[in-house]
Structure formats: C-alpha cells, structure tokens
Length: 400
Image (cartoon, rainbow, N blue to C red):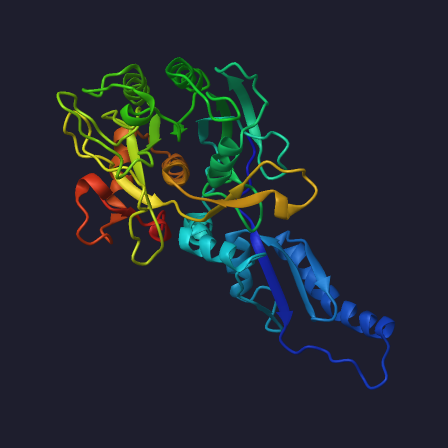
C-alpha cells in the first residue's frame, strides 16, 4: 500500500509586498504582471517542495494542499522572504470549523511527521458505508445482515467519516487507514446478535487492527441480558482483543433510563460494551469544560466493573453522510452520541498503532489501551469513573 508522507491540509500563501494595479491598468495587463511575479513562487514550490500551487491573481496569493513537512519548510523560508503563509481555519459553516478545532483534527494530522493511520486496518461494524462517497475510500466490504454489502446506511457512513474522511477540510482522525466495511445492520439500523457477532469474525478474517463498533444491544431497549460480561457479543469482543485486535465500542445513549429491576442486574451500557477487554467510550460535549453528553450511558457493568473506560468528543461532530455526490453541502452533516465518540477513539487508536509501526515497534491491544488511557485528562469535575472512566481523551496532545 502506498500512502503519502502525511495528511495534506489547505495552505494559503501571499506576497509580502503585493503589486497594486497601476492607474488606469486593465485586468489583462494586471494579470500578466501578477502572474509573472507569482510564477517564480509557483516554480520554486514545484522545484524545491514538489508542491503544486494555484495562483490567486487579485489577492496576490496562491493556494494548494501541503503536508506538515512542506508547511514547515515554507515557514522556514524556503520560498524566500517575499512569501508568507496565512494562518486560517477553513470553513463552509462557522459551526463546522468550531467542531474541527475542538476535535483537534489539525494538530493530530500535523503531529509526529503527519500521522494519518496509514497501514492500519480499521473495520467499521455498522449499517454500511457509502462506497460512492467521494471522500471515503473503502478497501473491502462484507455483509452479515440480510442486505448485501454496498447498500449503505447513514449511521455507518457517518461513523466511517469520523475515522477516515479524506476531505481536505473535514478530514477524519485517521484519513489514510484501510477502511473495512463490515455491514452488521440494515441501512435502517436493524441488526441481530448473530449479525454483530459474525461481523466480528469477518473483521478478524480480514486482519483488522481496530474494530470500531458503534452498535450494540442493551437490556432496557432490546431485552438483551448479560449479567456477567460473557454474552456472545461481549465474548466475541473479548476474544477478538485477545487475538490481537483493538476493540472500541460505544457505551450507548441510555443514561437516565430505568436501570434497576427486582432480582435482575441491569446496566445502561450496551453489549459488547460490557466486554472486559473492549475499550468502551462515552461522549462529551464542548471543550474546555468537556461536560458529559447528557445521554451518555453510565456504568458500572451488570457485574460491577467500572465502565466506560474513557470519554471523547461526541457532540455536533461533522462527518460524511449519504448524498447525491454533486454538492458538498449534501455530503456532510453534524451528529452526536457515543457512536461518534467511539469512532473518534477508533481513529485515535489507529494513529497510536501507526506511530509504533513507524518506529518498528511491536504492539499489543493491552499496550495501546494503556497508552490511550494515559492520554486522558480529568476535565470532568465531580464525575465518577462510572461516568467518565479515565477522563476525556486529549486529542490535541496526541502523538506529539
């Protein structure tokens, strides 16, 4: 597999001493003068950085998409003192840019030489990923539910984009992972325990490094009983982790539902989120306070183990959706919930694995789990471990 040296981000450069139009000068002549001036910058960028830039005549500027390494060289003056980079936060909607900054996408993609998830296989066990979406690249697809692979679901497409969107502005946490579409639910979200469990098998058959599971069953809503963390779903997740995969699961959005019943242990957590070896994720709202998402399921498990293991951003996150492919406004939307935060953590896990692979180091799910939890910060004052686990994943500080 061939991957770029790092994720690309939009770059905007301007001339330090712009050329104003002369008195009475018409546009064709002015364009010629500015093009001549910018032409040397474009040529130097191509020669020294292998960077393709496009001129912005009236602005006396140029733009393109550059890796973190290329941006660093630009900032060091490789293009000369007459060129300077303009810092900016690309946005179509103001709320989208706010979400991108809160998620820490830009720091993640520029840290440590531009980690992108390259070479890491992430299976998204969900309702199906839209293979036609122009900013998603699905490496392989399989279905364990009655609908065939290739029939996409909105939920699955959204979670996949949180991990692996390749849009230059709205990139996922790990945009260059090998994305495996394991369709365990119909496009309307209906699934069965067998379909989910078989999906874990299919992911492992395809050598997935990370399983991202934003689906699950619970006792209150689905009548699913798991008093000891050894139901077929939790068992399958635990076995997958023992066999070398990092299993990331959503805690669920069941907080404040009825969780006690005479003679029957109950929990708000979804299965396989009760699995001992699964990394179970709750959701937070806005930084810097990072309040818990009100619906994020609390622990403990039905057998008393503290869960979730951590929380991560999961409210008003921008990601990919089903669309007609002709208008970018129809290809992205906002979503909230522990499904989203679990996908965020799955993407972060991919970066941790990639970092170890780059260093030539072996890794185990236990080591990745330990490192991940070590990057959490307790910003949720007064929250118990059964609400926030180790704390909120600090994306901005990852992989530095």
